[in-house]
Image 1 (cartoon, rainbow, N blue to C red):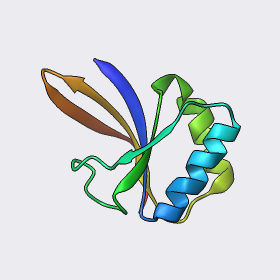
Image 2 (cartoon, rainbow, N blue to C red; image 1 turned 90 degrees about the vertical axis):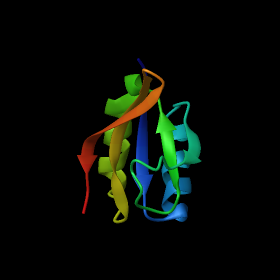
Image 3 (cartoon, rainbow, N blue to C red; image 1 turned 30 degrees about the vertical axis):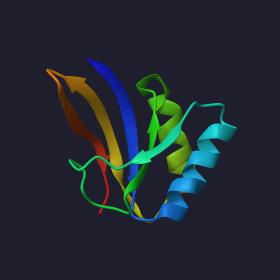
Length: 90
């Protein structure tokens, strides 16, 4: 299974701030449409490589975004997208 991470937020503005912060750390990240399996939030999320999860978590811990939905692991398996929560926020 080819895996990637997703950081989901309730605010488009926060998505853009986190994307910029992760790019400043040298990570290859992209803004994507939030998968329907997550279904909550503003409709946009930040996608990142799972190999960068520690850096992503460190940046998120420093930023402490109030409107974070959570961080998820996603990947395609048997033709379907599988998503599991790494961390969920209120």
